Length: 469
Image (tube, rainbow, N blue to C red; front, side, top):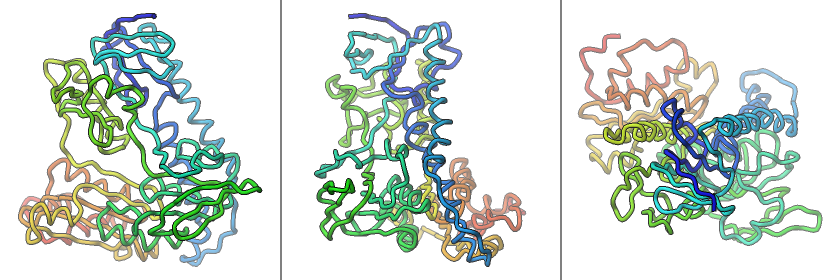
């Protein structure tokens, strides 16, 4: 057994890799990463999926242009070329990240799966043991494989593998109704695959604000087939190599199947339970407000976690923020910085695009009572740029406290939803009330951002005296 004592050890080279500031240049560090550097976001998540989203949206352009009386020739999507363009950029970034750390004189890179050894160390199957003064667990998450017969067949994919297909499938069946499933349904349908999405319940994106959820559920089936209230029972392989998806409502033939039913934290892979660390019911590590991992209900000094392995929101911007908190606390153990309790925004790059932050209308009513809640739903098509787009479906909903104008949440569906919501994200995080956010600045006319302005102005909230514009 080879043993090493280091100042800092990190499990996971996604956001965990960002912890190494100049502070650590003269200290000994170990990073364990069994996969490519960059984590989920760079390799199988946010970045490559968005690089597929853009071509899929362009592929829809001829149909969208018809609404504006423009006839465009039908194009075709070159899947291998799109795939190779994307991963010829991403793979070198991951490799360069590994090489940069591996060549650092004070950093030991361990390209193996590791198992926790107590609360301040880990070991590998090859006999390497690392003990650290401080340890950060940033081991991420992985795709859930549901208990469906046939999920192990060739041609059944998760989000980790589906983007590297050899060819664009003529027919794809997607199992799941959340973020990942809806993004891939938009990608494959946009690029030309006959796409069927199977969901166990009535609604896609069922956790969103009811009004936005219902609007999206009315729009999505215009672009791909949605089978609701359908239980996927098993998957079998036909003699010609295609797959048969057997459900409670019938069967679907597909060239490939994408199983997208969520992600699970990798706590079991690193032996968190065996190390005595506290776990949530869903397997996440329990951390306190300083991102310290708990054991027996108490924080373990010098043991931190960040990202999907401990966070309720499996979002890169959350992991990056938590990494900044942990980076500070590693360097200042006697002046710890707490995580923020600010609302976290999220976007779903499906078609139409979705974005949200804060409370839904239903949640706000439960929190402060119906009489204290004001909402405004602004149709995109009722603004100048919305007219130019001939937009008939996009909407922006904002939720506020009628008593003081504080913004409680916002929910958007439509073109550029992830950008339109950002002024509200800023106002909420900086404590700016709705009227001040709307009248305390200029809004470019006739830019699409007037959708956000008009939504804020439509709220029944107090109008301050220091917002003259």
